[in-house]
Each structure stands twice: as structure tokens, then as C-alpha cells.
Image (cartoon, rainbow, N blue to C red; front, side, top):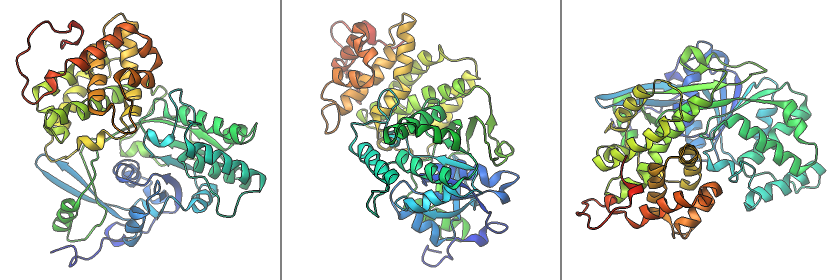
Length: 466
């Protein structure tokens, strides 16, 4: 049966009626549907917690979701086969440019949670974690929000950035007198709840002095660590879902069986019982998020730079390459020295198994997007910790060098490795020994070639694998 012949997926594929809207989400995409929406659907009180989801900007996913009553298929893909599950926790899907609709949803007193998946770069923060006022869209949003606050904005003027839209929506909630809600960022930012709170408060005071107090009264901020490899689905996945379920789904999600969600913070108006679906709540998130950022995400960033130079297209291909595998293990060795024992040996072993799953086509070019932000969050902290401990941080230097080899000089990227280091971390750029290690690795990239030739002459001692 083809997609044209199969009945369209709809609300009838999941039990019960649509839940009442009590969660709003910004950044409707594959990861949200494989993670937070999936956890919500599996919670024991799922019938009480419906999600109104808004895309980042594109309308396509929202349109296709709406055509099938916001129900979608989640495909857990193992090396041996697929398991398909219809998920119905999203009850409303809208394009991200419906800013008034988003603000009205957030201002609804029944809504208790606002979740975000807008990617690290989508917050448009500078290296210090503040709204990047050099960014024309951030400056534009600040001007629009000032005009809106004074009642002087054009009728169609609305903020465009994620933080601008969230600030506008929280202001609407504050003025409506609704109770405080929880803002739950689910992106790979360190201490993401506190980071987003600080960025929103700074942007608020940029709009009008003292306005940050309204943010603090309106929202509590929850930090999270999220973990589930979710590549983009393609036409072959749509066809596979139709064949497996007998229903046509235009927007299925393909993901791995593994999932993890750790949360830290208060929910002043309540939350779903996510712990009944496997989520964990903790008073100290820092080690969990560092484990995930430095090991899983750090390895992804390294492989996205080294893999293509050795002829690889996916994570599975790259991790099967002994050179890429050795560099990954060396990076993990450096990171592990600065982590508490959270089952790291098992976690590393599981990561290798997850990366090697040949049926999860996690493309390296997808991971390489927004690489500078990812390096700053995933590699630089380990390098700084290693240097503070008196070690060379050679594996981190090689990761940075690999990215420089792949990207420096391309439009929108630093022209040189030195310029990259300066944008990545002024402290690392000022560290003469570390900078020399990076430059030596840039000048001696022979191990990144598909067939490394025999080396002649002395090697840079600081770039030998450890």
C-alpha cells in the first residue's frame, strides 16, 4: 500500500480524546516530538496535559501535523528492526510566525509549562551568554519590544527571535494576571534554565529598565539535560511507516531506543508526572549535563569535523573508523577527568553502541551546523579544565583544529585558526601553549586523510594521541 492509498494518520490512532492544552512548546521539530512530547504521552496523567506546539519559523511541520490531528508516528530504530508508536500528546500545531497566537497560549491561565527546543544558536547569545546585540535580529526585536511597550508599534510589528517571542508572551501573561509558569529549555546549553532566565532578564531591561522583575514574577526556570539521537526523517522513512502501520504519516519521527531526561527546578503551577515515563528530577543537574555535553555532544562535534575528511557521511561510518574512534576516546579521556562517577564507563560503552547503530542515519553535515556555538559549549570547557590542571588538552586542540581545517575561510566562518580560537574562547586564545598545539595540529593534518601516508620527520609532540 502506498502513501496515496493508505488512510491518513489521525486522532483515531491514539486512545481517548485530545487532552486539554496545559503545555506550550516553541520549536516544534523532530527532537521535541521524540523527547518531551513522547515523555508527556507516556506519563500516567497524560490525559490532563495537552501540548500546543509552535514551530521555530517554518510553517511546513505545523501544517502537516494539523492535517493529521497533530498525531504522529514515533519510530524506535534498532539494528534489528523498527517499533512504531502513535503519539497524540500534541493537540495544536501552529507556525512560529503566529506570534500573537503563541503569546495568547502562554498567557492562558490553564497553561503551566512552556518548553523550548530552538537549538543552541537559536538563543542568539554571545560568548558571555548574553543576548548578542551585534545580531541585527536581536537589535530589531529590542526596538520592536520597546515600541510595543510604549504602544507605538505598527500593527504588524512583532518580535522574530525565540527570546523576543518568549519575552513578549511572558509580558502578556504578566499583564493578564495569570499565575507563574515553568519555562523549561531543552537545548544543549550549560545550566540552560538559568542561562535563558538571565538572557531574558537582560533583554527585558534593554527594552525598559526594571522590566526584568516582571519576568521573575511570571516564570520559574527549570534546567534540563536531554539525550536522544534523532536524525531527520526522509521519504524512505515515510514509506516504511506506511508499510508497517497501514497509515500515511507525513511527519514521522525516527529515533533511537535510548532516551534520557534530567530536570532541576520548580514548577509553580504543576507539571506532568514525567518521572512515570522515565524522566529524573535532581537537585544538582550540573554533572549530568556536563556528562552529556562533553561526551555525547562533544564526540558528535569532533566526528562532524574529522569524519567527512576521511570520507564518512554518518556517525556510524565515522565511529567505525579506527582513527575517528581513537580521537573520540582521547577526547572522552580528557573530559572524564573532570566528571564525577556517573557510570561513565557504561555510558561511554553505550555511546559507542548507539553511535554504531547502522540504521540510525545521523548525518555529519547535520551535526556540523552552528559548529562554532557547539565548540564553545562542548569542547572549550574541557580544554580550559585540562589546561587549569596543567595538562596539554591535546585531544581538545585536535578537535578544534579539525573544525578549523574543515571550515576556516568559508563564508561566515573565521579566516584562520587563530581567529577561531579568539571567537571560541579568549582565555584559550591567550594561552600560548594551547594555541600552539592547535596550530601544530592544523599544520599536520595527515591522520585526517582517508589513507594516511607514512610520516617523515619529527611529529608535534603535543598532537600525538594519548
